[in-house]
Length: 249
Image 1 (cartoon, helix red, strand yellow):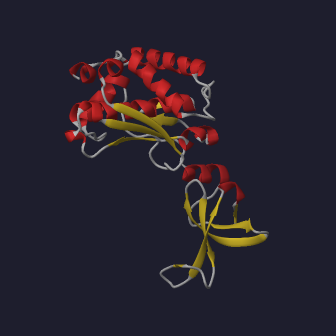
Image 2 (cartoon, rainbow, N blue to C red):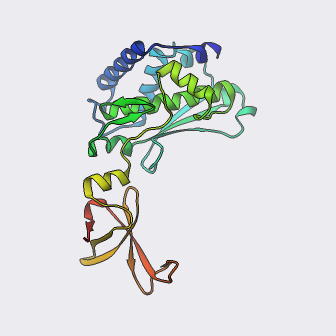
Image 3 (cartoon, rainbow, N blue to C red):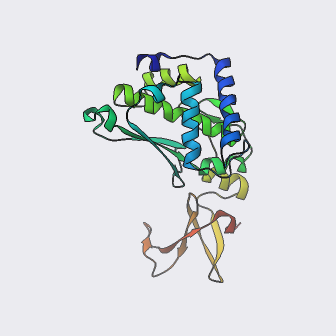
């Protein structure tokens, strides 16, 4: 464990190792063949883990980790691009009973190129969605390491920041990958509170843009609607793809 958390790489070395991992991914993955990710599977995350264990961690997990590490993909994650799940009873778990899970929010990868600006992950500028995936994955690996070594993890803590800096050169614990609200604003010129229209069952509907996630939430005035505002006005809620909305000027 001490070898794992004390390991440190310089900036030039980190960049070289990260590039080598990207080349291996594009060579061996069935889905990822370039820097642009349009398809991904949990097998890609397993491959990514094996490569990071080999190139950055000296095969520590392969040689020492007795527990189980799962990988999953989510299209519901709208804020965090990644998360690490750990059982609450980790302190009471035997090493071979420990189960951790790295979950990746894939929409951040699929939407990477939808807006034009610098996209930084963990304080590092990225050029494509594969680089973004690698940096998000590195962040989650630091959570895994901290859970294993200390039974708790917090990316706001100094210990986590030191591990992330030493291993991967991270200078921050957040990302600024495109969110659906940013995509709506830049690509469709839509903001929460805008008056919008859309077609539903061949009928043109007008309403207020109330929220933006994978789909937009639009409140359409309806005297018998189930939703009521503070003034007593009633609405029916509709979930509409952003590209089907038209802003009412």
